[in-house]
Amino acid sequence: MPAGRFISFEGIDGAGKTSHLDALERRWREAGRDVVRTREPGGTPLAEALRELVLHRPMDALTESLLVFAARRDHLSAVIEPALARGAWVLCDRFTDATFAYQGAGRGFDLAPLSTLESWVQQGRQPDLTLVFDVDPAVAAQRLSAARSPDRFEAEDTAFFEKVRAGYRQRIDTCPSRYAVIDAGQTPEAVAEQVQTVLTERGWW
Image 1: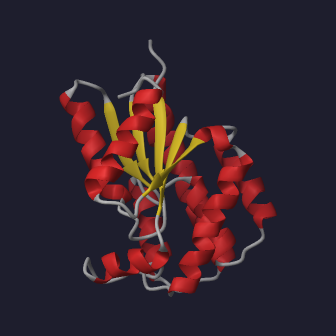
Image 2 (image 1 turned 90 degrees about the horizontal axis):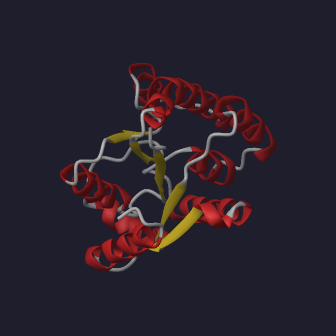
């Protein structure tokens, strides 16, 4: 049975990653691929319930991190690992990089316990490719203001998202080969071309 592929989509709120995830999912489904579209926190009934708490209930960074990793463990065991085992292509809207960027860099939480939780929960599982949609937080804020009522994270100020953006860059430095940075400040068409180029280079388009 062919090996599945695991691709995560990352970036600060307002970067536009979800629109390009939508487009890739449509393309691959039309091409007949077995595609599993999912998100974090979320992806299972339990993880979705934890997502609601994380996005809408006040809590400190440690509590956020523990809930996110609890959701991730259920998500991995119930959805991601079974999908990869059967050869599916898993497209995930955020994964562990978001935890290091948001709770770690954004909230200023110690990265050491996050690394420990990552090891316990994931047991070595990482995406085969992570697309990081990079955009100026001021531009992202303008996009969000016209989109919907903000959750706890979307309501944060620009300074918070500057730290989150820096957190993504720090994470990329730990394993550059796993990441592709997409300039999400360009037009949607130009951003889509960047995504296509990355996937074509890997023979996945």
